[in-house]
Length: 164
Image (cartoon, rainbow, N blue to C red):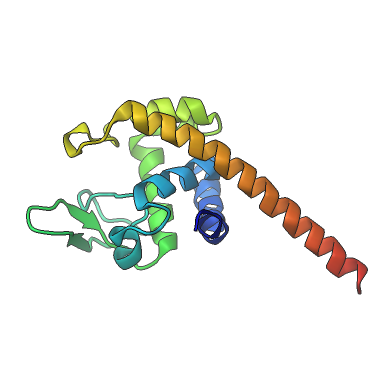
């Protein structure tokens, strides 16, 4: 499940990261946490891979649609596509959490900055230290799997090229 998630969504994390100068590894790690590796209802049904609430100004990627997961639930953003979710998250990070975004190529510093920000809501039961620690571990795991994916693609490309 985790390898499939990484191979499926890494390209979206790269596109969002490139557009907003954010490390795609931290984007993917935060998405894994917030969406349960893409298995959450928000990710599955509403293409919201980051648990972003349905408040704030609409933009290119979020048109204002929201969903509630139950009675007394917060409203969460609904996206037309996973790509829109990844781009909106990177946009949000770059505009509202600039300090974390600026540190994204140093995952431990990013994890510290984002876990101490308003992005994490202890009111909703989030534990800042546990979140920070998990984010660092997932960044390491994703970096290794991305390196293996890239290596595998290069090897396959060379084999295909040599056979022609």
